Length: 182
Image (cartoon, rainbow, N blue to C red):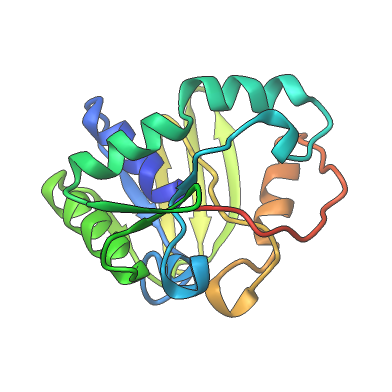
């Protein structure tokens, strides 16, 4: 979901965007959120609800795109919500609704989606990124790495993003399982 939303946001700002999706269908992981009902966000979104080495990062992320911004984003796509004790779901109670509106926005913005592309390496040469996949090589001015963790390899979260981020010198905080909203 984060990769799709990032792609939409970049395209809305004028970027030419290509999504390299590991699985055979985009947004597959969204189907498992909220037991298939898709918990979009929660009314209570404070830094203490999250884990991390630097809590100021969480504070900054929530300041830029928190509860209200999440509602606004999905409302603009046509989603109507229901509130269940502070947990926000689409009124349809189906995660497929969210996948559908996100896919429609990808199409509307002419975002290219390449399915079943496993990214093997990402390198930066001068000002251009070179992304090598098992299906070919891509080039871009920027890369957004949104791979998920390692919670559900059958849905695409196989941990491959960890090694890709390490290629750029990023470190990894201890990983723990968690249930979170979309």
